[in-house]
Length: 277
Image (cartoon, rainbow, N blue to C red):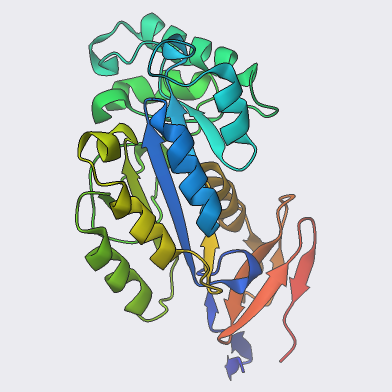
């Protein structure tokens, strides 16, 4: 129950829940669009895990890479995202070329999926602050780096989205830490990235199969794409509330969950929550 001090109710209000009131989330992110993405997406599907596949549109329909039909198939259950047309070092290009790399990549990929492509990962993981505004100007709303944090936070700025770890960085230990840590007063997200060709190259497909077998099917975990995570967190951050936090307005179209006095509360899109002590 909220406590009252000098006539003002003080709530235990935390923004730490994902859809369904789930306290944790997992997202996977894979780059470059080699043919092995088809096998990886199939493993994700088998265990109910969602992934985001960042693609270079110039390689589609070339030997060893995804075909248009492959992309459409993966897009049925996962997110298709940008990775630039030609995979350059973006921080070395004139800004008009940076803009063209991502605008054209979006255009090509959007002919294969039924939604706007709004995210990317930086080729080679390389970026600079100078290229972020131009990328945002052509519709990019998030971008993943290759900087492992070994933490489980959502980013303050989605254009510098640092993942938890690469899949070769002892995923089992990371997953053990993630699943056994107590519920916190903030979002708890495990974000793993890599390249599907690495499993073929290293002859260790069992690594990802074993992880997905272990990670899938948890009722307290939300399995989501990069874009779904960003959209949900953005909706939570857009909440408007009264000074005493007893009235919370959700101006977005997305239903969000918050913790009120340690209980999950859903605030539907476009609705207002009124706290009753």
